[in-house]
Length: 120
Image (tube, rainbow, N blue to C red; front, side, top):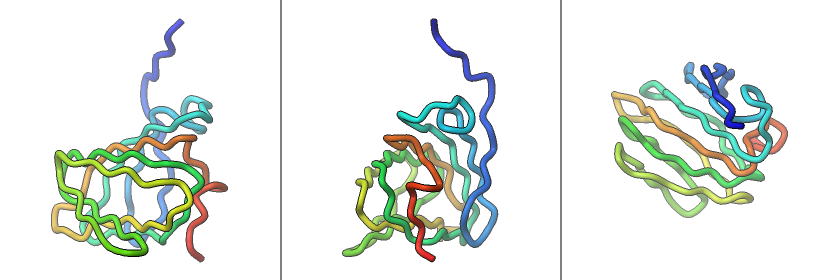
């Protein structure tokens, strides 16, 4: 039988400015550990600590620009584009442009504070 997700749960976010994370599917909202799906809204100038997660992350940018910094470079992922980051690779997300960013993130397995391994 299908499971209807009536609404997301807002999750506290890391970073320099308030970012809205609406988890539709994941460990908190649906008790799903296999995958998490969330809509993110980050304001202009937002930046989170670097991380070396134990999960792959698939991100589709809906509006604005999401900056993804990695050990050997930087990608500015614009509305209509997507990026895949791999488990075990250091990355850092930010939204430096004036309009911020809105995007959907899918994590396999599901995001967990214990498996994200943020820089201290």
